[in-house]
Image 1 (spheres, rainbow, N blue to C red):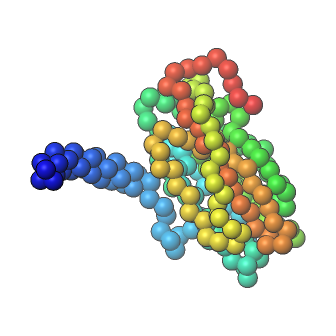
Image 2: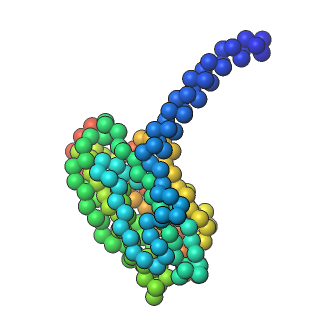
Length: 202
């Protein structure tokens, strides 16, 4: 009986594993982080990161250093959007989220996060942030949710990756610790319609 079950399920497992390998290969061939020694910023310095046209943020990595002004180095990965999302029609920078404050922001106009801009302020030991957002046709978000906190505790390394292919980062909410001088992020993640819709988010 066990031999019969093995003969039935082994081909299925082989097919599923092959599909998984193909998906992973596609994912990482397009979206590798920059090298670990090539962060997008150095401590206490500003930076501007934008995905190439037609791509969106799918992963965020960060490491914290208390001795470097309680600051973080950042690294990002981008991924091309699928064809059913349509063409990228416009991109813009959202309003600045000030240093030392908690904040919540989503891309306006149904946009998706395609970049980050940040400036460090030594007087606050924190950063201000801006999202770079891009819109695809008149697609609309639905089935939105918040990720868990990244990092899990203040001062820890951070490694957030989107594992679901058809979910997109639309923004984030952050908390700031005046004691640890660090932030925790919850990313706002949504699916997008594969058809144009008539309403716009705010």
